[in-house]
Length: 551
Image (cartoon, rainbow, N blue to C red):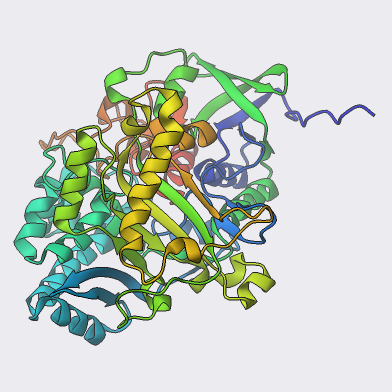
């Protein structure tokens, strides 16, 4: 019997061809198809979802882990409602737990989002006074007020710098978050080294930088981590991250979009009015016409598809180690004052004091895997046990997701490609060693085994993300994050980290106004590399669709 022929486009040309079936591409497809446009999505992999997927990671084990991206903060309810998505998230009662040693005994800082009195007591026990908790309240009241004003703007036409500053309406907050290195504000508000570190970690997720970087890369990363939903809360996707992208694919198809997987786009040609997209399916090459092309891949990838030469100086670089684990039980802690089910229910900080973060950065900048790599951990299954099979849930199994910081791609390529596996193992030990020091039993004793008797643990380096997901340099944001504003004509002509290729004030096209423009009028960015991209948000997909529709 001959194998079935792969699906083919149903027409020779489309109003929009979308390169990449990740969550942002699917958002754009759903909006455009609902508006009556003909839409084709071409996805290189054999499935949709990109980095936002749920997979049975370990052989023979019924646990569906969010293998790459894992929490939701930036996805607006507006997108869920307008696309009619059957998707939900759950709030984590515990914000974070940070273990440490004070006075020779294990202790820690538990931040209970539902009980400020309990959190205040934890600050007092750790620091000996009320000062740090009061500073914590003032600082996050400031970021909360900024979040309320800035987050709604992310799904509106892109404001100028001056317009956004007026919207923030707090000169001190604007100075602290948009103008001066974040380290200055952290050090001005807080004195405790551990508390300073807990605050700074949001500025370093996937971003290799430090508190006083004059480029403000840390500020941009921090901003996106504290404005989500207008509150800054990071929520657990019910059913895993794949529940979102499955719902998006269903919405796009129901609206009439055609989605083809196993189709790798190899070239895009455009004269600014019409485009032709070349792609490979199996051993065959095909071409399809498009009035407009929306690219969900990284800008560097788009440049290659257009036959352009990307700027080597702007090559993206990821900085993280993602570790997925399945445990037979949560490990016991040296700090016996806290229940592990609470400690791991929020964000569990490891080696993330202010001094430890700086030390790890300096070691990595010198080309060495940090001796104690900072990391943060969370347990999806405590909030949403539906990702576990019934038998595993009944037996008390739990998942752990660890995200390691200050592990840039350069460390994994310094000795050539043959050293990648060795460096990955060294990086894995650099994050697990500090974790084990906080536990009353070895983590290895708690790991579940797959059906081949192997421990249920895997690590993904930036090189793995580049190979598996096509992320240049393993950069989870596609390139450096930008501030959510554009250069304007109001005398406030400050640039941002994306340079001129995303629009600036180059004539005021719809693509410029929505922050999704490229140098080609009918080729738009709809992925994380757009202005206001990064994270699981759907925002650049929404904004690209709005630009196409002229809204």
